[in-house]
Image (spheres, one colour):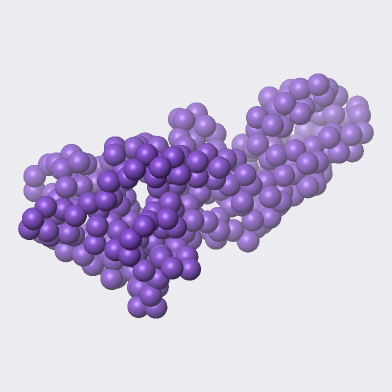
Amino acid sequence: MIFVDNEHNYKPYVNLALEEYLLRNFPGDEDILLFYINEHAIIIGKHQNTLEEINQHYVQEQGIVVTRRLSGGGAVYHDRGNLNFSFITQNRPENVQNFRKFTEPVVEALREMGVPAETGGRNDILVDGRKVSGNAQYISSKRMVSHGTLLLNTDLSVLSHALNPKPAKFESKGIKSVRSRVANIREFLSADMDILDFRERILRHLLRAEDGIPQYHLTAADWEGVHKLSAERYQTWEWNYGQSPKFNVQRVQRFTGGEVDARIEVEKGLIQGVRFYGDFFSGRELSELEGALIGVRYDEGDVRAKIAALPINEFFFGVTAEEFLQLLFHAGSGEA
């Protein structure tokens, strides 16, 4: 196995692009070990509806990056207290869905540090019954990725807020995350260590090379390919939000002029239909507003730009444009 250093990149969309680039373009046949640490971000599973998984208002307020990965599974929160490991291996039947093949060496490394870790469920690493690592896989024609998180010293308060979406009634085929009791590995260490020391301990255990760690050094051409993939996939709204499965969302809010119940149909991230119900008063035909929103990305900034010239307070007496946006993106379902 050969180690690839990501050269202290902390941008999640660059690290995910690097992982995919190595999967598809690595010149040799060796198995690869990649580590990366991300600045605070939410990484969405491939088959998930992004808006069902995140507290969008909190995420935007905190400047948390949201990006989608190639593998399935649930949404996870990353910050600089979380170490991500990635095994990129040949696509062989004995590797596929064999999470323990890749997690057990990590469990052994943690035990070497005095942490009573164990594999749990299908794809987790647990300590005292709490989750410290979640894992997922992605399969391509020749190679596959088996990757996971290691919560060393993650800010769990941010995690709980960021992955706690506002209550709304979603109907979609997205794979919903299963929330688990989580813990930081730091709680179980006898001696404190920072994330880079932790990374080094895990690395040396996994490779156990007496004559130095075998390493592939990324070339300028490699980095050019990585940044191109990052820009074309992992930084795009189309991938991170537009790839969400078709879904319907209901949001309800009571204003001084009455209750408004919005039913929104979204496909490929675009509003395909919207209807408004409630006991509010209106001075204009709602079909004018509903029609104006068709084809607009279900994104707060895009909708704000679209309604800038529309008299929202005439469609809903006493409701401002900002309150209308609050309804569409931050209100609850009315059924909680």
